[in-house]
Image 1 (cartoon, rainbow, N blue to C red):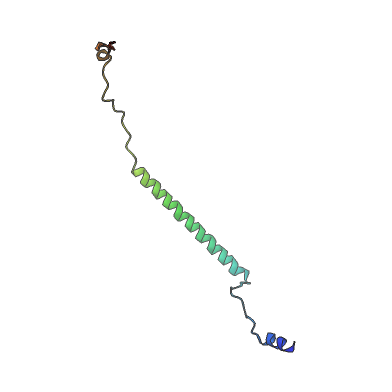
Image 2 (image 1 turned 90 degrees about the vertical axis):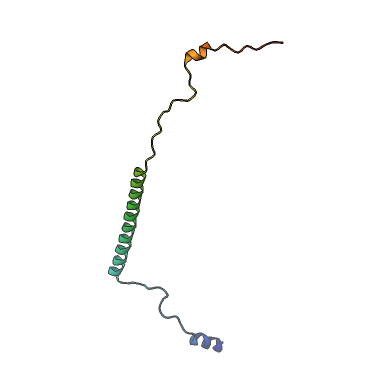
Length: 90
């Protein structure tokens, strides 16, 4: 049992942490403010981009289609003057 205990004692302990721990509240406030500012900037950039896209869309408006008259329109008189087709019975 003594050997096991001795090996445990000689093992090195990890000193410190793998990530920083900030105990200063002012520092945390600064970090939060920085994050908030970055988010606002991202939002502004996104908004500007959307506005530019909208402006570009307005510039490239589709031309309105004009109501063109149909090519095969004939006057009613022409239709009436034609003789109706008669089926011939054999």
